[in-house]
Amino acid sequence: MMLAKAGTAKAQAAVDFMVSYGIVLLVLGIAVILLYSLAINNSYSETPYCTPSPGFACGAYSINSISGVLLIQLAQASGAEVTVGGVACAANVNASGNKPAEGNIYVTQATSYYPSGGFVTNTMYSGRSVTYQMYCYNNGGVAKGNLGNGFTGYVWMNYTIPGYGQQTQLVATINAKYT
Image 1 (spheres, rainbow, N blue to C red):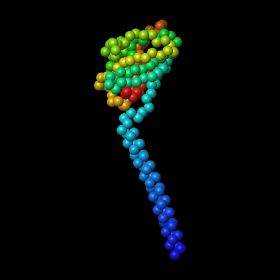
Image 2 (tube, helix red, strand yellow):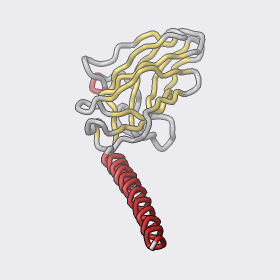
Image 3 (cartoon, one colour):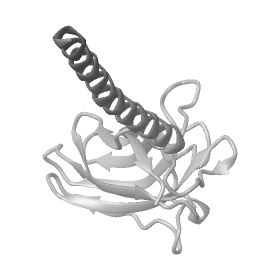
Image 4 (cartoon, one colour):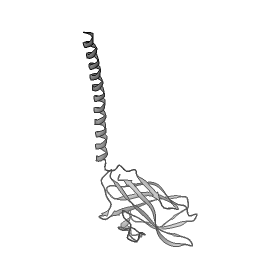
């Protein structure tokens, strides 16, 4: 009779063990499924970044979901005063790889590429930052997006350094969340 009770106790312990671990595994499974579904529904899961070209630096930046306006803080470290004649933002590079493929393709001061009355030529001093506003473009026109989605693109600058003349250069690669 003692054997039956000992066997029953061992069986009960095994059932308790399996139920306890079963509940833990069930809870973990539900947690993993929830996290996975949230990651799928979050259309912007990549970490935002601004990667400057050599000689330049990125500061704060954001892109507006309704207007497609990029607000970006840029600095240069040439050791000279740089006269900036235009900036541009686009999702793609042209076939030559030296300018935007859409939008302000010549990186000009044309007022249609800038909010609030256009672009004003300015001086960017070495080591100091300047904040620029411009429309970003993609194949469909101004790059507007859903709140929380991401925009990946490039920022160009048309500038003159005394003694080196005017040039247009890719100054940053960005990945920003629409705000």
